[in-house]
Image (cartoon, rainbow, N blue to C red):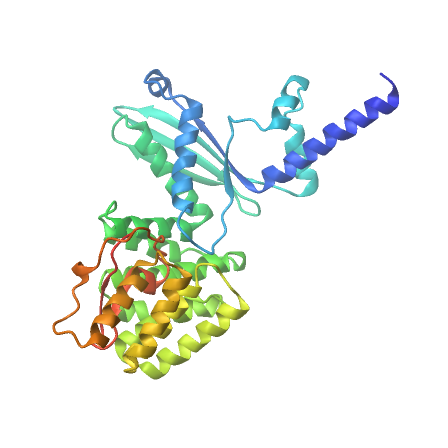
Length: 369
């Protein structure tokens, strides 16, 4: 083989390795070690890492504007990794990452047998931060349960807002019943020493604790949270939308209109795909509170055109049609037909999580999709 060919092939290999380093820099690498007693039960490293990553995927599947890294299983090799292993170039990707100043998030977890149970010891490495050591205990040999908890608790160090979001969603669908535990965890997260680089997460946490406060029936505490979220990131549409929802509930329609107008302006300047129907829902609730039911119905119908599976828009349209028809009796939510399709709930938006009667100034949980 001539020198030119060797040089060409070498350049290709180096290009592949550099590409692999860059791709890996946007991922979160998961590495799990297991004790013999767990492996003897049939759970080996590969499936354990799959369980860990599946739990992370569940957490990140809920709609949110907070970006998260993509989990990657350490035992599942990349294409370049498979090529490099026989050539003993396994360390080259890491070296190139160091050269380019790239450092992915790495979670190294080791499960140990302790007496009648299990313990998970984890080290979380993130760019620009000292390594974080975490430890979890399991009173029995349920390794799957421990893996899921480990995924949640370790990811809470990476993206606390996304973990809190998933726990609120679990409260709403009934799979998590301990709302006090979720509130305690969110309060502990807010008490952290936050960096300016984490402003989006920090702001999102205040939005989520507002929803948690409403779920607990504490509207006064909820009303303080959008202002705190705004003080950190004033360009998030969710903040004025939630503030408007709370002002309508309290009867302050002047401030509700101001916050709704601000949300409309922000949605134009910083558009997010999940926001348009909720902007229209809030405009509809405000019109309804001001006695303009025909306008409210039109706005709710517009929200339904944008998002045909939006359950709250479906309910509001039926509710306003009932009121505008002059039919006797109160609107019966149970009379709503089962929808053919539903959009996912967006737990950060109060207009998604709750239904409000803006005249009676009462609210209730919205039905889950």
